[in-house]
Image (cartoon, rainbow over all chains, first blue to last red; front, top):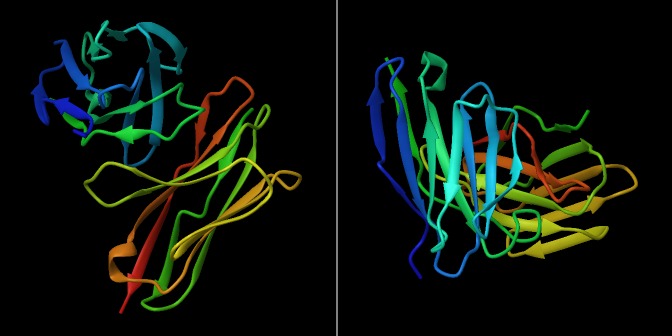
Length: 114
Length: 109
């Protein structure tokens, strides 16, 4: 079975720009969660989608948004980028909602904002 | 508020045993996960506990005490490849994952 695929692996953007990150979950998995990881903050939960519906949302500003398509693929968008948005963005899929089954993480997208 | 506490960093010797603790205060409890994350890589699932007691899986074991709000991950016969961060995550009453900051484990020869 193919694992979770995130594209792109690396991104460099300028302050004020917007960015879209993509995540393809493991085949058959219905839940996709997004996390931000920085050295000082650890894993910070952004949101979770289950069957195209946002199931949970973390404490991030409205500049961070996401969606899930009917094939379970998910995208995350960050608008009006700030320097503090530089981080590793991890996507994770699970067969059921994230609290009910183990997460399978992708290798992440490393975003650098200059 | 909800809180997960883990030691920031631990050091152990190759071949030895190490115990990584995780204490939690959450609104409800519906299970606890442990994940391993090597530097520059994605986290990978290690174990899941929902009932009190010890779950053994090869060199790794995970223990849970719900009354004490406490779990530990026990790693035996340490190998250099066990150098990684270990993340504890609790499932709260809304079935949302609450993550600890992780414990960086350094293995010395």
